[in-house]
Length: 402
Ligand SMILES: Nc1ncnc2c1ncn2[C@@H]1O[C@H](COP(=O)(O)OP(=O)(O)OP(=O)(O)O)[C@@H](O)[C@H]1O
Ligand SMILES: [Mg+2]
Image (cartoon, rainbow, N blue to C red):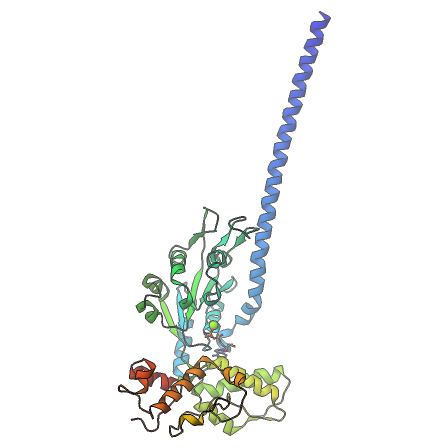
């Protein structure tokens, strides 16, 4: 009997222990769950930090962007029309395509549109499509999960996700490789995507502004740019005119930049040398406003007196090319101004300058002949009309066209 009692007590003990074990198990489960949620919280915190970093990086620019439309200088009809169009579309969520040569102010205008929109306090995120290595494009745009590929050590949000509720600026959109254009198309059409390594679809609300210095129509015709993507972007195109087509703005811009840089470099400048100013009006400005700004910045920096002289780049020889020089005059160590330079320095010129001097060389060879089987156009492999318009753009004029 005593033995039976002992068994019973032991059984009770076992039952009680089992209960304790069960309770402990439940506690452990709870702990494990909360540990998991701590880990996932940590992950979210890290992610938010990443987003914050990106946003902070944009913050300075955004602050500058406020009131930017007022900072955009120009009174020429072409420029004023572009500004009017920008203002009229800023408040809508319409996709804007900004066209214009390099340095005409496309990025500045994109920031100004954002600053004047209802999203102005939201992120403005730039994707420089020309600088995206094709292997990284997808992860850069859409982000990735931890372990999605070798090197993906942690989950990372993509640019579109960071731009959520704000504006995304697709700079140099013409540079997106054909094979990646479909990815852009889907996110632009549906405003949704998945991170690499995840099946969960993320929906976002972004305003799209794109910019290009290329003709997307030409790229479409050459089958380098998808037609559907082109129509998706070309909803509200705004064209910024090149500086050579808005010469009346040159003086205003010079004054603006002189003020800006003389304040920065603590110089007192009372006037601008008249002769140097005259030359600037004739110049063809291949680098547009950026080139003008750099020129003024340099001039202000090096000036000692009150009168500012703004020197043009050395390779510029004026709008007219004399064609009576012979090719032999062009020894390698002389540039077009006849100023001696080392061979290495002579190589350091812009593409436009290079194109210009090559066209000049060919024109000398054909004694100014443009059209016909031995004309410059045939040698350069372009129609005569194209060559003439290139020459006009580059400020080249043939005195004795044959
Ligand atoms: N209307 C303007 N008034 C004052 N400054 C301007 C104006 N337009 C452009 N700028 C200045 O000129 C420079 C070039 O402008 P921005 O970078 O916006 O040109 P972009 O068209 O984007 O050039 P790219 O095609 O080479 O990227 C910047 O420093 C910008 O502040
Ligand atoms: Mg730009």
